[in-house]
Image (cartoon, rainbow, N blue to C red; front, top):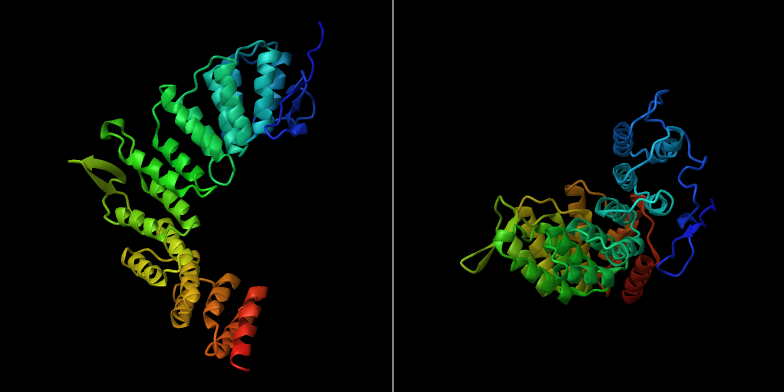
Length: 399
């Protein structure tokens, strides 16, 4: 019979990627090494035993062994079924081998004549998501709906939304998928909401992130879906990026009443927060105050974090130093700089550059030179901005 033509997956950006070109013999070609986690036996395997071996390889992240076992099907004269392929795709997903997962799915449909189902397609979506290939995750999800007539579940949607969120740049697709879930009769989960909120961070859509958070807070308690500290931290991060310090303080204020549960629910129409603010929460709020030049609030948040028995990180202290420096509060900046040693934290070039920023003006030349000397003793090299600030301070004081 005629050999099938090579299958080439189109790149969502219009580029061709050699890793997405697969021939009909794939994954049974000979370029994969022999398995390390599988003990070869002379007797023929059955499909149940093969599936178990594939799952074991997946647990050990031994993805080449998975491909070797698939190749061995022909030698053992076994006809694979969707269960075997589902196990293989799941194993490849654990190792973030998105390209191999796409190839196995294509081979399964075109060469073995098996119809992909919800499990196999969802495994490919998850593999692409873990590999941060949101374009392929979305394309596979759409193929499930449009070409194969498979109704994805919430898990597949959540994986695709997560892949589109954060810094991946797929925020438009993330919000589209988020909006599509109710139309398909799929109940949104905390992962759905949190991923959608996180996606708003990329293009600084902080208002939309707050709307999604408000919708999450209004979900009935019976739905068993409520906001947690991740939800608020994602919204705080969106506000931080644009310096919306007022909203950041309000969000942090909701987190402050602590309890054991870790969920938000409604009682008599009043929202009750039962999640604790953590280091990430305070860090985002302090950073928002830095961008908004609110040094007093930054110091107040540091004090609250200490009362909550949370040790500020170097990132939080750097943001507080930067906030004080922008408002020429050099005494507070130097005091925060000393806090690094008290907390056994190592200051960085960014730390000293922030402190140097408060040394502008006629009174800051001596302090600026002292800070430069400290950096030298710590083995830190000032950057161009640090030198520029120090020179400006010296010129102002005629040193």
